[in-house]
Image (cartoon, rainbow, N blue to C red; front, side, top):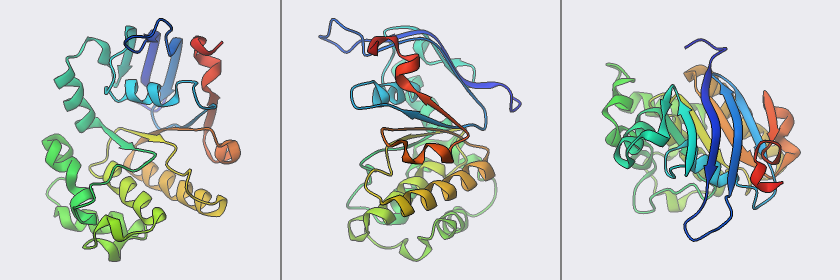
Length: 231
């Protein structure tokens, strides 16, 4: 797949939560190119998290086509979507979703336990060396043996990013992970994230209501402009 090809292709996608008579997502068409750093913005209630959960395969769209790397997640079983996500995607949650009773390095290693394919991308290089190099780039190299509950919010955020990027995923999905940081730290964090994503060949889709960071991305788009359910 070259840089001009789409890593995400959506056609006539709809998602309606069980028990609701109104869809949360109605997206006629939406593409993301490989290598993009896409900023999707919009206020609460416009379907940002729902779209990310569809893109990751956590939710199955009610109808339509949603292809990631040429594979239609709509036609996959739940187990196949889980395996596909583990192999090809990193996910940074707004609350980071770190496991409190594990150390920093144990949290970061989790994707390798979930996906042999993800681990194989590291090749013959020692896993511990890869993690230490990644964490060194993120400024948390001295924290690997600490419990994540002992870390600051900014440090926890970097642990979540290290976990998401380990094994060079094709796609990184981020759900407002900078909301707890001040403006200076947000900008520094995003520049570092983009440097690592470019190094690993990872496409970034980042959702937020905070348009103060919009200019740092290669492309920005209002979710309301593509989601007919909000109009």
